[in-house]
Every structure is written in structure tokens, then in C-alpha cells.
Length: 111
Image 1 (spheres, rainbow, N blue to C red):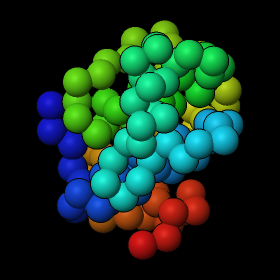
Image 2 (cartoon, helix red, strand yellow):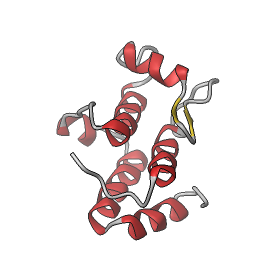
Image 3 (tube, rainbow, N blue to C red):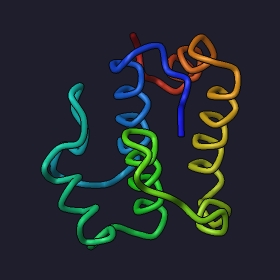
Image 4 (cartoon, rainbow, N blue to C red):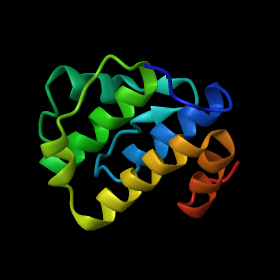
């Protein structure tokens, strides 16, 4: 699966923005990719995360390396704020890297 990102940094920023909604004392994403804490959550299928947080984590990993998958039903169960965030990203991906940049700016992730 191929996603339209300008570069590695833009992909990382999108993932970081998604996981920023997860309540965790540990940093979950860096400019270089997922942190050890994020990988641990992934290996534990979300561990202590809420269902919505788990979906955001899996979405970030799916964007990062395309090895993770999400069921539509899981996405549809997100609360409206997070569903709008993820839905907006999906629309931006359809438009290309410039639209992703706009999505990042609108959702608080500066260049």
C-alpha cells in the first residue's frame, strides 16, 4: 500500500499527530518513528489504552509501515473528534502531499 506523503518527515508528523491524542506519560512518536513505548503498546494490542486510543495507535502504525490493518467497524466507533481527525487525514491523503500539509497545519502540527 502506498500513501502520498511529501517525505519521511511529513509521514512522521501525521503519525505523531494521531498518537498525540493518546493519554500516555511516555512519548509515543518521534521524528524517526515510533518510540519504544509505542512499540510496546502495539505488541500488547493496545495494552491499557482505551479502544479509541488503540485505534489511533494502529492507524499511526498503518500509515508508518503499512503492516497494520484496521477494521472499518473499529474506525466507525471512534468518538466524533478523533473520527473527524482521522477522516480528515484520509481525505488529505486522497488529495496528495499538499493536502496533507494543510491537514497538519489545521490540526496543530506545524512544519
